[in-house]
Image 1 (cartoon, rainbow, N blue to C red):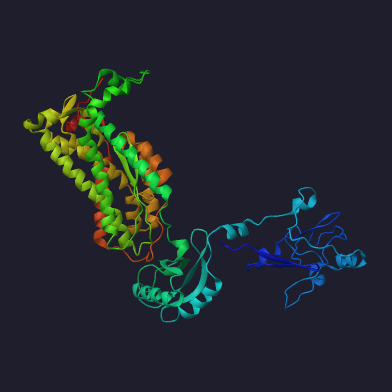
Image 2 (tube, helix red, strand yellow):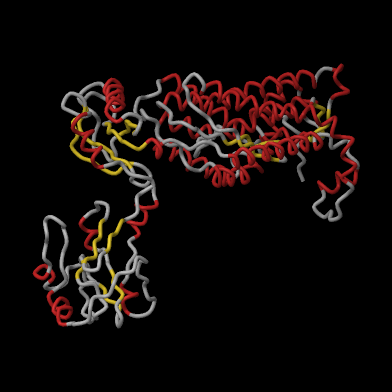
Length: 546
């Protein structure tokens, strides 16, 4: 945090000390003095009464931002104290006053809310942001780093710009004098020797660059931020409490999904209440308790997929020494869960790490979901497992082109071309798990897919992918009836892209980009619903025509 401006007072002198700021802001500082008759703002034309201070420093400007006429000739500059005296007119009035000077109270002067002086009083918002915002890089450290860290053999600095979300850091622009990875490793090591653990050094693409680096690839710049500003904070007790409550709600929504999958066994009053939009009076929910036990296997499957997803993230992050937050599970009554929000609790070293950790979770969850889905389809066609099967409407298989085709190929045309289809609960658990994994792999915002695209193709590519994804979700092309709630969830919780890595320039390699491209293609096939004409032609579900 910035330090507040300090002031010292005496009976004859009003001293104002401030942190170094630009000349433009210094000219706009308004110091005020409460008098017995009028409120005097510096260099105004109002009369200064006998209750005024004998001398004070003035940095006043007129309403247009220019210095008052005659101000430069009336201010006396002192090179030792860096003070200025009052204009001659006000000084003559004070000299002609015979009353003894008033003593200065230790309490700061109050500002009267009445009068023209209040209307002229300005609060500089930029200075307020400087005081309340994150602490900036020390200018003395910037000079030291320029002198000792950079040079003709590593990186020749030609320009400096603000760096960070609020301009709290410094971005050094210039010319690279070697291989970027080797130079960056050398600069990181030297920065630690010079400044200790005070700062983090980032290698990023040069903003608004006109061309590429002569050695190949984009031109690079080096940004510097304080560690306490750039690194995420620790998990608080309230965050643990919220995560625990969300996990309990997710357990409840998973059990609810297991109960809903037994719709052919539920009491008619319960089925009517949940399926008939005209039903008003709720039934006795105690009737659902006998079905909880039979709903647990499906609930275990849904929760297992989500836990496996998070374990995949943690296993990929552990070798890279990347810390992750606790997962915040998002309950959903249709799929059991929308997945979980997991934050990075340390800065990622490079883009490869970002891609690997981001893909590990969805791939782990999808692997378990695919296994359950495949085993469930095989059990659904096994006569020995007929007692464990549940009846579901065949039109549910039209929710996914890819999964519908796999089900059609396994169960056959006759089974799929009926009003209801008998399937094993593992099919539902695998279907929900694959759908959730596909939603989380969408290339938008801070989702796993968005992080992976940002790491593999850059932030600019993520903007294009994100706009396309939002458009397809808004039109209902992806996700069907779940597109609206999922789109709102992303906009509220996951819309912002991930912060840059320490090395945000080095490419991730061809095979990672290929794997990610194939994964996004499978995501589209999974979330693409089947329209009636195509479903009738492919034999996916019983299509009723009027």
